[in-house]
Length: 449
Image 1 (spheres, rainbow, N blue to C red):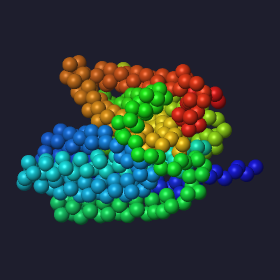
Image 2 (cartoon, rainbow, N blue to C red):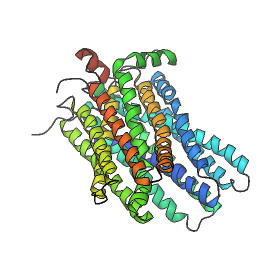
Image 3 (tube, rainbow, N blue to C red):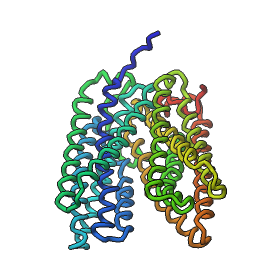
């Protein structure tokens, strides 16, 4: 039996818009990975400098609600995506120039680095928030989970390709070569984004599936923000995003040190373990995307179920890693893969839920809602990586043994994931069914299955 064709963006259209995320990932790999290494190794700066700059670009992303509100009021997302990408790629070039002058002129290099990473944070906030709002309003409800999977997988693809190509072209290293590569990555990323959004908002039939309203009358940002935070469903989801992403980001920076310090793995072996985790993430994302395309329109609460399951699975895998500190014969690789799979399931289902909770095209504040949740995620990422790494360092210095320190850290992260699961399971449960359906854009939080 042939399934009816959904209105809204076609699958090729979703892939095309995903090129924006691919472009963002390519620039992110350059600025948060390659430039970090050059700052420490080639420029001889302390590791805390690039770490602080990366944390600062997350802080700047607290501007996401403003960018989302601006795209709501203007009625078009494309200018914010293009403008955000322009600021992002220019910021990447400025940050690259800053790194190349750190050794000769450190003060000027740091000042220029602050400017560059401020532009990177603002550009990511404007482009990323507006893209998610555009997807939320132009993708049919039953396709949102698959659309979230596609766009995030494309972002990971952009990160992998950019890191691999940049690493290969930087041999031998020189400041001039780095500047040329950064300019090339920035130029290609911007052109990809231009192609991705070309005329996508010039086809009014794409909005029909979501009954998108006309551009709203201008409203002050403060009033819109108050309305969002006074909505119990939106407020609870904001808390869920912060808590879950705090646990998600806290684990990332300590997995390889854990493998080396506790299991005696070489850098190559720990890198393979990290690659196994990312493979699990991709499989989890693909699984949710495929299942979402098949059952998303038939079972309204399925995305909430997968979000909760992903958080519980992540907690179980982290508990397994905690157990591995006491039992060295523990199957470490399968546990790490399971952690990645659960992370992928949770991340994509949460992003798909985010699209629905933005209003499904019926809310005049879809962009602002996306911005609020993006800001919560940015705060969590800024805190999570630092707290996870600093916590493990502090515990190792107190306990004088790496294994008990990692056991405590992984145990705490598991508990945080369980708290996130509890929050996700309760979203919309205390609200009238009609209010939940209106707030969620039929995503099914709190609804019957």
